[in-house]
Image 1: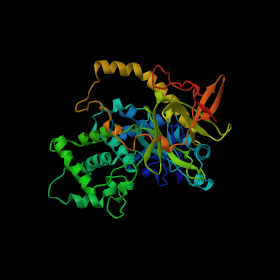
Image 2: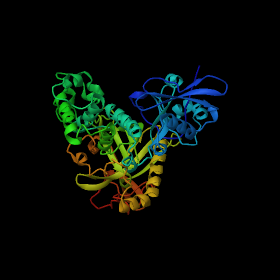
Image 3: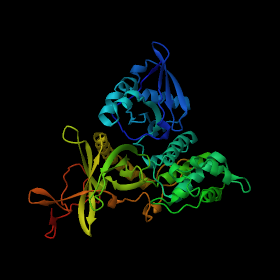
Image 4: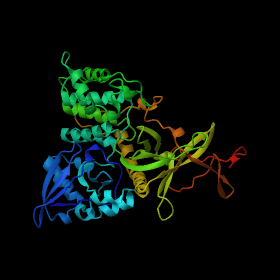
Length: 466
């Protein structure tokens, strides 16, 4: 007999490939005892025999997982318990009681998704032990325990392969080469490595880069990537792994850490994912528009809007660069509003983006909480930068400036031209829509302009009203 297990309040979004199957996390074996199945990022299972499951908190289950896996204390901060299904993802707070809250899962789906009733009735979440959204990257760099690094590596790898983390071809090859090293061992000249890569290509590269058209890498001619060089590019990157780290001395921890450090260059690493839609710009003679599906990635660093089909970033903003608010279904269609600086034909303007999503309330709350955490962490981070972090043996230095983020055509660069935004300007005490300029923020939710680059654009006589 199986029982649902779910939670409320937290971070929601699109599930990764490991959560595509329907799974139960609880199996009743008696009146007071139950087996709880907790899934890791690689879809392996940690079975727990627990007493009084309905009253157990997420913190207590988290501790039980750490004891079974024999993880160090840093795992308490680095990981959290999540409830995931094909329809919704939720990071649980330590005080949550997963079993009791799980009984509300159908209500959560109705509130935060557009899933049909039949899908809601069939959906069943699973408990997953994975990275805590609120764990800073700088803390991750200080970890040297191999088991913790492996769990973080497996989760990051899954997000790269599922294209939840859009990557340029060069980065996909570099990351795939490290996966080759972990799974296949050191590169050895003369061995049929190319055949192995060809047979297991989707284990090393995202699926949309492995499509076989007129050639093995025909799909690499897609937007935001350079033409593919076949598996030879991956093979060359695999060969370079040993040249960089000195293969015979390197442990798996070295490669796990190298993979994570490369992922730290991606602005959306460690984020929570949400689902939504944005308006397409009007196109053609009839000015046809419509909506496109997007993933909204929110982390401690900021917000990224990712095109779900094209696998590239549409908009990336640090919290210092935006204002935001949300509307609820009671007011109008549920939506998250992002306001940011831009330009129109060379004139600085402020732009307003509407993201249609039933998860707008969750996203707004997460943005607010991330900003609060950043304010709290600023004094500690400043002190650490002055005195230097307490480096663990074998830890890596902080990542340098992210050069690939500045590459022309990079999939991680914003594509404002692919978004339909609204621009406004202030006239006296009123805010009027103009073509297409605007001057002042609707929203009070923003960082102080003294701490960031967000500015208010002043109206000019040349502004054309609509």
